[in-house]
Image (cartoon, rainbow, N blue to C red; front, side, top):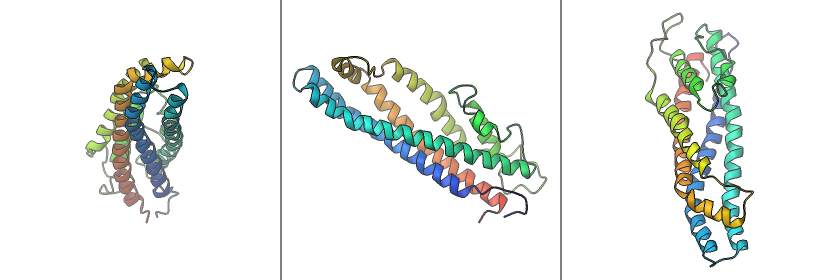
Length: 223
């Protein structure tokens, strides 16, 4: 590695991709579990099963959702660390642009839930990490892979629309079991769509992170 104080990025990138993959896999699993859950909800409302039967059918869905949430939270922390290290390395190499390392954290919160700053930062990190650009060379005009934009479109605008629609038909755990069963039925399409979108976003992120990490490791000479 270079004599400069550069941070290794390979291990944290792999850990982040694993957790994102787990979160995406469980998001897809929620979509798959949604269909038998709808059948159980309809059976309960039709009097063909008891409330205990419906509660038991809800349990796996709740566990999968919880695991997905935990994996997502952990992956967010690791992604921030990974992005911070990328940006810090580039700053040390005098390839820093508009987005300072601190935006690797703050950018995910400003503006709320829109993820515009992470998208712009990923674009800059991609360009600045180009190992083909010589020391002191012009990197700001370098092209950016399609996968960066594809990830943003799915994780940003599309996911936000799906979340808004899902929230409008979401579960109200404070209601009765019959209310919950009806909500499961009413939200079946949006719940399934949210799971699929989450899985696609995870796949696109892994593709982007893998390629960006490889570019950056070549740039800094990380074995």
